[in-house]
Image 1: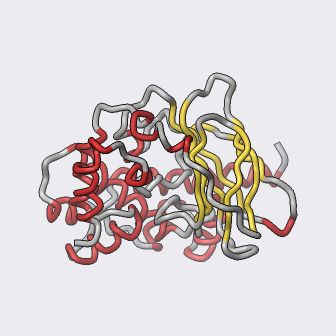
Image 2 (image 1 turned 120 degrees about the horizontal axis):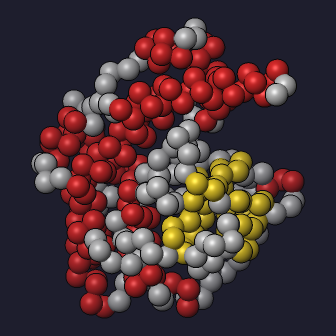
Length: 275
């Protein structure tokens, strides 16, 4: 092992230890000093190392883990939203609701309702008509590439252009693939910056896995670099401990493609978004 690769591995282990501490108690008031002490580094060195390893600041990573914790509580417990707010480390319900809605795409109440709608069901029952829709007219700027996966993978793949390495908020452009292969994403500008992110969900997982992620989900990421003029290869791999959680409520794509007998359920979710 070279000195450079050895140093990178040490940095990855140190950052992994800090992320493990964050995951252990997302509500803990762990500031930059506490994180750096956990990694046995100075403040500034730790900040540089963390961002080099994860492409995200420690504060943003911790915020993402808090929202992930809140999502899990909303779906797996009957605790009131106020309790979830405090358990996730927020002192203001208004602040929590705003941050949650911005990151996930729906407010906490609507997210819980969405979980009830998709629980125990295959996501493909909702998305059957998605692949029959006519593609949107092409725009001048396109993000093109290929999603590749292990030979035994079967399932749906979500691909999107996001403003940061965290899959949160609505993507600048996105699509759903029925299998690994080529994708084209239209963009309004020639190079908006950000990342190409992909998430592959095995065919046998039920709907709530799309809301929380699971051990089976496969992911891929690459910086968006349209100016190089060549397609981007995204190779799906297992979700690792240094990967940020998937925050966006992916099944919200279903609102556009629901069959008539589902409109009443998710129509209510859509209405709840702006409350």
